[in-house]
Image 1 (cartoon, rainbow, N blue to C red):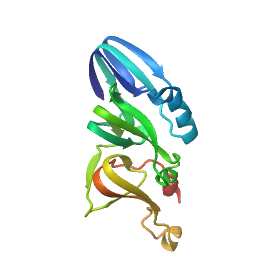
Image 2: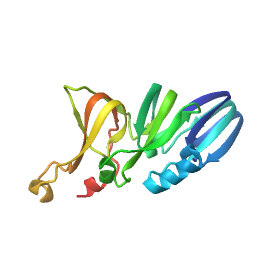
Image 3: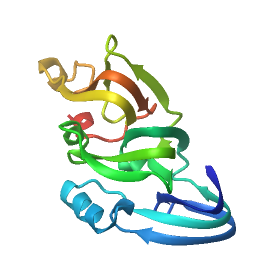
Image 4: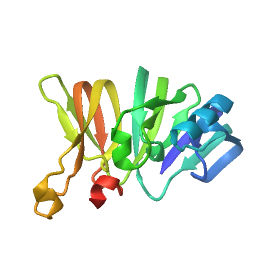
Length: 202
């Protein structure tokens, strides 16, 4: 559970994630993931679903989603790429958007786009179990199962890879038909659980 102390400022959180609050709070549903009409049109076109609410007031507000673990990410002008279902709450000063991510989205069945969070402030991410933060360097690229991917930040390139071969089809392979390869310099957040993906069903 995430406890946020508000002193007249605002945060944006996933719709329905408020579980309790102390003090005086106001809640406003946002269109287009908090990006207004343009964001709503963009998200409908891209298929990246994110419904958020604006919370403002004085006191403490508590957020949670399906008893998932909460991971705080501090941004200092960087851009965070995150699956929309894993984004719980962001400071009101942070900007959210949608960006093209290539074929990785196709492996998950979530379209070809993902949510971005940018600016200076804190974002709260959800994960199914405590997330692990893995460092990617030019010398050490990283392969991640799409179902375990949560988010990434830094100067990273991602490439969709398929490991489907004859052994996988007949059930003797490792079972990981799809992978995301990250190269460059940055951090990748991975959860110790796999959401259902098209790759997992092959």
